[in-house]
Length: 253
Image 1 (tube, rainbow, N blue to C red):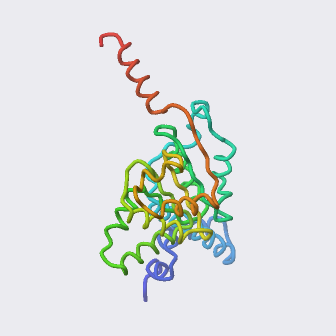
Image 2: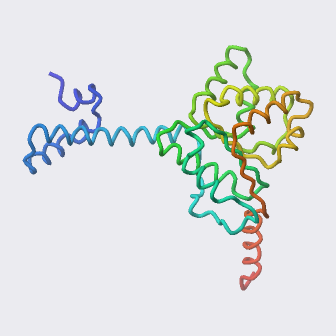
Image 3: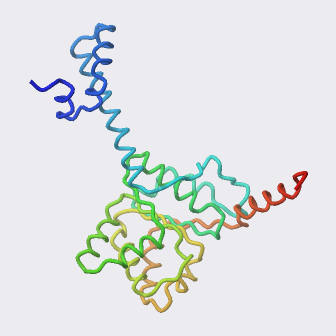
């Protein structure tokens, strides 16, 4: 006869299998009825499954390490719509499949905000993917056949929320614009996008010189999107300057 822990694993009850002795001891100590014991086992298994699912979604999201939104210095930017960002963190836009675009110069926290939105979506049970524009376009551009390209495009359609970071930091050719347009078009009004960019939409043609799809790409992005502009000086530059000043003012240096 199969040992009970192994049988429980086979049945898909790994938590009960791993903690069987402790669970039996607890049931004996509290004099649970068979029904009470089963209710406790089911509750513990459900909680364990929820934790495993969360860990998998976090790993697949590729969010990476990020600063919590609680540490964001709201007083530093000269312009920022905190209410709109708070609403985004509540994932209001996901329910209606809207897009969100964060427009800001370097060092103003747009990537940090996007990562926090991604994390909230994972916690809410959504499948999320966070990727830079360079990584996305390199992946799609490296596909050697129409079949493999179609497979990768389906891959980027699957997540409930796709976040594309750093649009505008590099220039790309017309084919890259076409590939990004395909990603945006496939998700259009079906699943949400979050984009971060350091350039206003009027400057996007400089990202994709000579690409005929840029206007259509922008139209698809903004037609069903909330655009949040953040203005001010680089927070990272402020920190670096403060660090240099502290170093200069330290005695003995």
